[in-house]
Structure formats: C-alpha cells, structure tokens
Image (tube, rainbow over all chains, first blue to last red; front, side, top):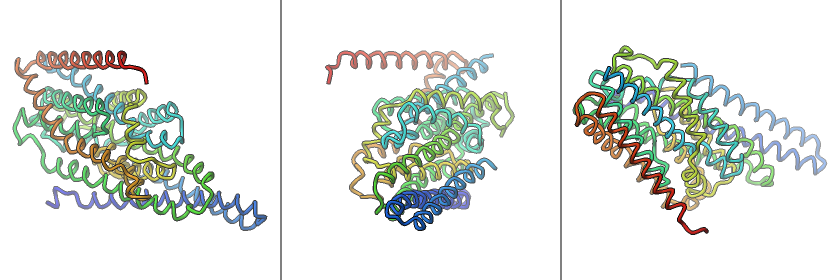
Length: 78
Length: 365
C-alpha cells in the first residue's frame, strides 16, 4: 500500500502547498496592511510611523514576489 | 497505413479534447478574477490563454505519468486511445452543457481506462499508477486547497480586518492579477501535459516512439496552442457558476482561493500528479468562503458540483468503453474510428443547432 500511495511525494506536495499558499497570502496581507496604515498615519501627521509602515509594506511585497519567482523556479527545475 | 490513419485521427481528437479542456476550464482560471472585478473579462481571458500557452512548456512530468503510469502501453492501440478521448470529450461537453465544473483530467483518464478495459481487460490498467498518482491526489488536492484557502483568508482578515476597506480591496485586486496569472500558468502546465501524454501514448502504441519516451516538441507546441485557443474561447456558463454561485467573493477571498489553487497545482505538477485543476480551484473557492463564514458557501451548488466530480471517472469510462465497442464493430482498421468520428461530429452539430434554435425562439427577458 505504501508503494501504491506515494507517501513521500504526497506529503511533500501537501507541505509545499501549505507553506507557499499560506505564506504568500500572509506576506502579501502584511504588504497591504503596510500600505493602508502608511496612508492613515500620514494623514494623522505621524511621518516616522508612516515611513516604518511603508517600509514594512515594501519589504513584504518584495518577499511575496520572491516567493512567486522561487516557486516557479523550483517547479521548473525537475 | 491503416494504423497511421487512426493515429492521425487520434492526434486530431486529442487536440480537440485539449481545446475543450481549455474551453471548459477557463472558468477555473478566471472566474474569481472576473467576479471580484480585478480585471475585465476579455483581458482576464486573454492573459490566461497566453499563460496557459507558456505554462505548457515548463514541465513534462505529468505527461510522463499519463503516457506511462496509468495504462499498460504494451496492450494499448491507437484505437483504444481514440475511444478514450471520445469518452472524455463527450463527458466534457455534457457537463459544460449543464454548467457543471467537472474535471477534464478525470474525464480523460476515465475515458482511456474505460476503453482499455473494454479492449484488453482489467490487466490493461496499472493499478499502482492509477491509485497512487491519480485517485489519491484527486481526493487530497481539493481538500488541501480548501484548507489552505480557509487558513489564508482567516489570516488576511486578522491582519487587514481593521483597515479601511477601499485600499484593502484595491490591494487584493492588484494581487489577484498575479495570483490569477500564476493559476493560469499552473493550469497550462498541468492540463496541457495530459494531452501531450495521451498523444505520446498513441505514438508509443503505434510504434512511432519507443517505450517510456518523452513527448516530442511538435506535440508540446500543438497541445499548448490547442489549450490556449480553447481558454481564449471561454466558457461563460461555468464562469458564472464558479464565480458567483458557490459564494459571493470579495477580492481577498479571490486572492486566497487563487493562491491556494496555484500552490497546490504547481506543487503537484512538480511530482507528476495529473490532478484536476477544476477540483482544486473549486476547493479553494469553497475554503475561502467557509473561512469567512461557513454559511457563505452555497452548499447545494457545491453538492451538485461534487456529484459531477464523483460521476466523471465512471461516466467517461463507460462512454470510452462504448466508443471502443463501436469503433471495433466493423473490424480493427481505420473504418471504425472514422465512422465514430463522423457520428460524434453529427451528434454535436445536431445538438448545437437545436440549442441555437431554442435560444433564438426564447422570449426576451
């Protein structure tokens, strides 16, 4: 049964799917939070906090795009 | 000479299947993008078809599985592959007609398995490959997509739930352009490879290629082109079902569903699992709905879709077996497949003509 069910490949597929799917959504949400919060803080005359939120947003966006690129590269490497 | 004629018919039929696959599965790729207004329908469909085309070139693992691991290539003939394709196309068109997003992939594998069993008995099926690489991933993949999308949308609402909705919605719409593109790429790479695998199987059965061969370049290019053209032609009935009737989605849910779907399909493709992109994206859509509120999912519609999923393998197998019986009733040459092709095309023409007549005579509004 263990031979028929390709346990290792299936487990790796599940883990990769969860890490990539949840991870990419998490960091992209942080990017959006950073952008939205930055605008609000600027309106509240808090430029330092706004800059910090914007920086976090940009970093999170970069991580999201890197995740997408790495995902495609890993998939095409076989 | 006779087997070469059958081979030409098989390649034509496989590319027709690939076209219907793209046509049928357009909804899987673009429905969430369109329903959340992240992109206009024609733009979303155009980009999806281009990425479908490109996706077909980035892997051949799934094609190898379909060609070598599902049925025993030693007993397969081009006529068996032809009959399997007829089973798959017929089931695809029936479910398209009814507006149900069933699986083109399972229709294809069901059709080939059914015709192979009708021709050579149960020994023609490679149980290890069918169970391990098709059936179990078929169950696991949509469940994983459901869970990933549900978990993702929970995280999204926790992080951005207190922000003003305007910027958040706009941000996730931009995100959907990327997640939708990734899903289209994933769809192209997994689904186009199934047609490549079937054509390769027919070429091996005909002796044109050696055992365990990879698909030649012309097979890859033609499969990529057929699925891209099919996707561009679109399937508006199913777009409506997937995009609005399962749940009413916001852009964050659309992003979560597409991200989950793309992650599952790309990871599965890496290991050569020919899974159903339809099942996966619908699992993601339901997960994104249930993650917000379980009652947000229209479980009645979801139930109808699940029934279509359960029926797909046996129904396509039965049609494939019947098509094989019809194809061989006049002997083992090319005449049977030619007659079945003509019969099949005639039925399609009559059905579409009647449908157009009914559409034309229906009262407005």
